Image 1: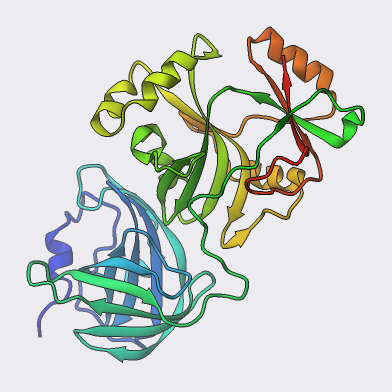
Image 2 (image 1 turned 90 degrees about the horizontal axis):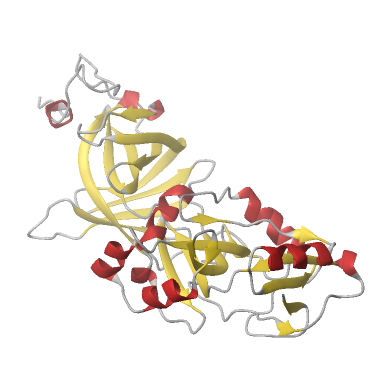
Length: 356
């Protein structure tokens, strides 16, 4: 009988990684256990492993579990893994096969509806992975590992995939409100309004017209890896900061390049994304939630990276915030009614722009 773990062992050194290394042959079990691992290797992906004949049949899925039907995800069929991988989390050393951090994203039981070399149809019964899915062999003559993952049953009630873009809500010119304690204040950074969507660990960015500017800001690519499987649509500004202040000239330089040229400019003209609103979160639109609740949810994301953050807002005390903006050479502040929903494409007076 062929050793189904021969390829697994051949790609690893027993003493070089913390991964399981079973000595004996696989022992068949109930064929009903699964694990999905979030794998921060050279590129973020999710490893799907299903128990079959004493091993874990495995696929690497770059964008993770689709939560709604009609979404096809690439699934790369990889070598079988030992059953001990059901609970494996750890750091595979750099330079080793699969080097990077691996954690258990979900685990549980599954039931088999269909299983052959062409189609594997299952129902997941996990905490996060639930529902009917199919792995389809695309019979690519050039790559026998080329499969696809698709959800078959309807999405969970209320689920909506995040849009990549919504027309931004805008502020109107105004003065400090008299009912100060009912307003929140943010610094106006003078950057380019930008919508950032993260889904399946991948990021897309659009300017205020809806044009795709993802290639313009390679600094943001790691945001997707940071958020992992968390799906969000963020509203914010792209800003160039030099000598501690926004630099409009630098921003103009960055608008003219993308791709390789943008990567070269990262060194001397780095861009920063300042997120100030959360419009979609984990399959649910947040537009009708009050501003303060959206900001709390935004803070919970922990957006704090080398080129991205969610700057602080201030509830009330607008005079002091405006004075601080003047002191730091900013163009002004934004006042936002604390209980206001987000109205895409509107400028209804719930957001004010106050010049410094």
